Amino acid sequence: MASAPPLEISGAAGYMAPPSYEETMTAGPQYPQYGPAPPPPVYSKTTQAPYPTQAYTQMYAAPAPCAPVTNPVVSVQTVYVQPGVVFGDLPVQAFCPVCVQSVQTRLEHSSGTMTWLTCAGLCIFGCIYGCCLIPFCVDSLKDVRHHCPSCNRIMGVYKRL
Image 1 (tube, rainbow, N blue to C red):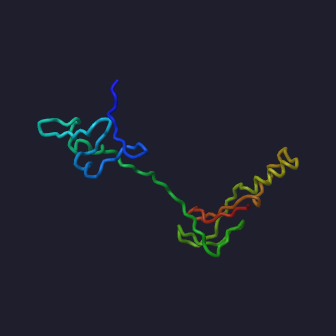
Image 2 (image 1 turned 180 degrees about the vertical axis):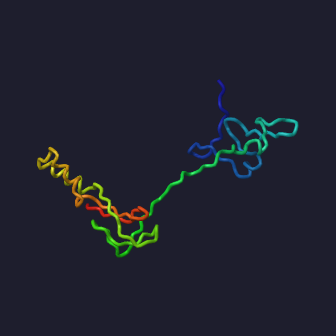
């Protein structure tokens, strides 16, 4: 079995003395176990590098063309709120911004939260055999939508609850 080269010991603690700056700069780094560091390889035009050389254009190809991304058309309905006009459960005189006319609104009733809560309350009190469906026949418990009579656009909404 081969033995390691003897180490220089300096001082009482037994540590190896580091080389001075001048020694390091002239001799290069020393490795006690392996000897001096080998010089870096020099490649000339006659010797080949250990890896294949490629041009910059070969490494990065142009991206493949792709189809343009188109977004679907989304239609947005805008509801204009007029100051001073309060939409309730009765028709109101209002200005329609779509057809640019002053009109009296047309009402459309639809079942809302108040209608369903009244139905559930009647079911709890025992009106199960059809009496709980009475709120769906009463317009004063439903939500109201105000429409323009000429262009049929929604001008406002009144919710009971």
